[in-house]
Length: 459
Image 1 (cartoon, one colour):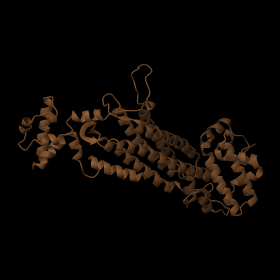
Image 2 (cartoon, one colour):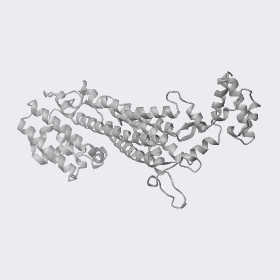
Image 3 (cartoon, helix red, strand yellow):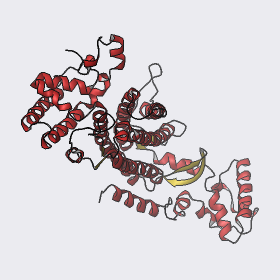
Image 4 (cartoon, one colour):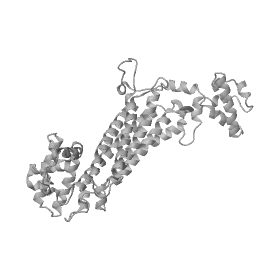
């Protein structure tokens, strides 16, 4: 059979052009969404009297039959029919005869493909939200077991102050919470219906766009047909949010890689999330977090790619917009796979509490508390800061930590020191002293956990 659009042409399409311009190899992922949109469209055509009720029912029956075959894997799509829309229309005509050609009344592939992508991204965004909540659940599970696990907190990757390990983990809970909120908010813009906008200017048929929007679960319709068929902002927004999520995944992955190294030795990842070396039998490589870190780049690339495609396009539809799909599909696949791995990896990792405590017992991260001690005795902070800096230098030169210095040594630097400084310097006391809202004190971490559980409706 000739091309469904071939009436105006006198030559067959060059085979290289046919292959180069075809999108069926990737847009077949939209097959079920395409049928969903077509079912709503034909329902509207019948309701508005644009086609007969009998023809509408016949077309719906044919579409449902094709859907069953697609789900069962019984359909082979053809490059000759270019894209998913023409493939399904061809299958429909083969299934029910020439009446299948009435399906395309009052619409264009331009508004059809836009509708498919809105439907697809709505479904995928809802799934992303659920996957993020699974990751948050894994974080909460580990945090609840490690409220009083003390680890070094870092700035500039230098030990700064002791903190609760649960507090550190929960920082990622709130990052993912913001990611989830961004996805939820994006649904407001994904849930616009372009169907019925035609190629660019609407249609001469008396269609009911609000009816198709309701049938498909959209909240509203695009008020401008040009905008409807050329808008890809909703995909850009998804790719942008996905890039932020992958940034957070990558940062957490980097910490997991560091913490599981021999140099840190704070955690051990479960064997099921690691691999070995082909030459060094002792190795246990954190390949999963490394790959999560690495895959962030491809998601960034997909965002930049679509931004570049869109930046110079005039209204309305241009063939360039065919390049909007592969990056979207790849990002969905990459992000879905990453989140599915991240949750169980966090849940199953072993936390080496003793190693963490040993680290905070052999550093100078309690120095700030020594300065605060002098401030509470009435000394201006800048003077206190200078005195403690000198004490730290003295301790380093004498191969001691602050808890190792004698009371007489402290007295050499200030008469304000009392014997209670040794209590102030204990790692647990250092953590507990930070009892401001959002701080690392155990009581504050417990409050934070309660809030986190409320966010996930775990109560």
